[in-house]
Length: 418
Image (cartoon, rainbow, N blue to C red; front, side, top):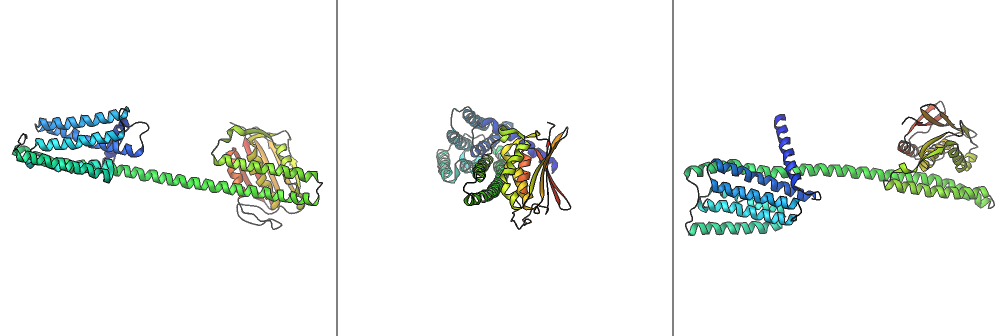
C-alpha cells in the first residue's frame, strides 16, 4: 500500500505540474480545477492515440491526435491570454463532441464499439458548465449523434476500419479504458474535493484564531479602559470637592490622554500594524514617575509608599504605550489591589552585562490569573496578568512572577544581547 501511495503521489504531483503550466497567474480556484479536468481528459486521447496506432487503426489514431492537439492549443491560447476561459470551455466541448462523433462515424454507427464513449460527452460538458448549461450541450450532442447514426444507417455508410478481430480487440480495450477514464475524471475531482476540505478547515481555524484575537482585543480594551476610567472617576470626585485643586485637573487631563492612547493602541493592534516603528529608548525612572502620578490617589487610599530603587538613568527599548499602560500599569494596579495598608511597593531596576531587570515587589495577597478580591475587597477579573504577558512578549520582555511568604515579585527582564 505504501508503494502504491508513493506512485499515486508522484502521478498527482506530475499532473499538478501540467495544470499549473496551463493556468494563468490570476486564474481562480474553480477555473483551475476545470483546467485540471480538461488536462485529465486529454490523457485519454493520448492513450487512445497510441493504442489505435498499436492495433493498426490510423484514422482513429489521427482523430485522437487531432482532438488532443486542439485541446492543448486551446489551453495554450488561454495561458497567453489570447482567449478567455469561457472560449476555452466552448471550444474544448466542441472538440470532444465532434471528436467522439467522428470516431463513431468512422466505425459505422450500428457496429461501432466506440458507442461506449458517447456517455463521456455529458459527463464532460456538465463538469465544465454545470447541470443547467451542461444539459443543453448534452442534448445537442445527443441530437448530433442520432443524426449521424441515421445518416450512416440510411445510406449504408461503411468506411470503418473494423473487422471481427478489431471489433473484439476494441471492445476489450473499452472494458479497460472506459473505467480508467471515469477513474481519472472523478479521481481528480475527489482529490480536489479533499484539497478543498483541507482549505475549508484551514480557513475555519484561521477564523477561530481571528475570533480569539478579537476577543483578546475586547478584553484588553475593556480591562485597561475600566482601570483608567476608575482612576479618572476618583480624580473627578476630588475636583468636585476641591474645584481649585490644580493637581487633580492635571491628572484628569493626563488620564484622558492615556485613554486616547489605549484606544489608539488597540486600534493599531486590530489593524495588525507593525509596532517596530514606535519602539523607543525609555528611561525607566520617567516611567516610574508617570505611574506614581497616575496612581497617586490609589496609593493615598491605602497609605502605600511607591519607591524607586536603582540607577535613574537606566533605560530599555520598548513601545512606550505597551510598557506604561498595558504592562506596568496592570502590574502596579494589581500590586495596589493586593497590598496591605501602610505597605511599600518598590520599583527596582538593575543592569548586568547581558540584561536589564525591573522588579516590582509588594507585601500582601499573592495575585494570580484568577478572579479574586483585593485586600480591601477590590474586585478583580483575572485579565490583567494575561495582558501583561501578551504585551511583554510583543516587546521581547521576559515576564515572571513568584511569591515568598506574603511577598510578591513581578519581574521583567530585557536581554541586551541581539
